[in-house]
Image (cartoon, rainbow, N blue to C red; front, side, top):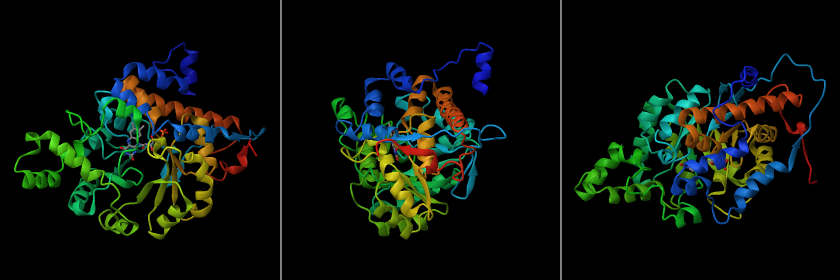
Length: 392
Ligand code: FNR
């Protein structure tokens, strides 16, 4: 409504509302490395394409003459809290390569739009500074989980996140090593191992990592940045070193909800229930890890049927507009994580660009539901009855 009201006053927006243009416009402003990193996928991008195609298989069926009191209520209950909107900002690393203010801008925008901010372990800004930029916003912390041999570092990171007001822990399980990403490989780009060490802010500011490094090498991190970056990368991308039994360590060291990110099978979703975690993110990391894998939305209904009444289900991978959010929620997600679109907003205009993207997606969702006769984003109204599969 606010957007159309501005139009009535002939005010032109600073950024386009055409969601399909954000990527191309952002590409014009990014370095080759930044572009390759955000736009790139695993392999030839088959799974990333399947992520988008999975949405097109479902269609919304609009209902008519549904009396309403106004625009639909978009609020949802997630992890025991009421949130005004059903989206959160997905964890994305090294954001300073997209815009000078990086995570500070996106965390401020999330707070401005009343959307939770999920901070990545691979951020280019420290935990404490992101918390400050996020202010009174809702913030959640995403962990790249150090090996068991570095449990003291994990405990230190969790402690810092808690002290800085992060309330929920997202643990990413699909990235214990980076995927086969030809666009980064062609650029000779490792997001965490550049000369400016931009993706290692959390490690380099961590007192336990610092003191272990000094004990081992006899020098401060600043005296041997390359070795330190390499060691930090080896710590948080430990290849395959954890099993389900290790979840307990996280539970013992975190007193809020725990959400496991990267779940793609019913069997794993059931294990999450057995191990007492509060939520999962049905996600394939935007098709950046396993190429040839299934489109993320394709797995959502089965996982919802198996465990939807036992834990909270987040969804990501392929959300590009308001209708996509509506479809994922109708299929049983409680909340969607927005990934690449807000990174394009960040590249286009820092905090204002991210705000614009979040607001656009929510505005489009609101009108889509309203025009389809769906009275709210709660499962009572937004459920599978509003969808048909056109290929069956
Ligand atoms: C990511 N993603 C990600 N996930 C995570 O848990 N920790 C991280 O540090 C990152 N970093 C990251 C960087 C970039 C540039 C991208 C595009 C993605 C994955 C992210 O949280 C989310 O799962 C995907 O972005 C969802 O896919 P789409 O919708 O962006 O295609």
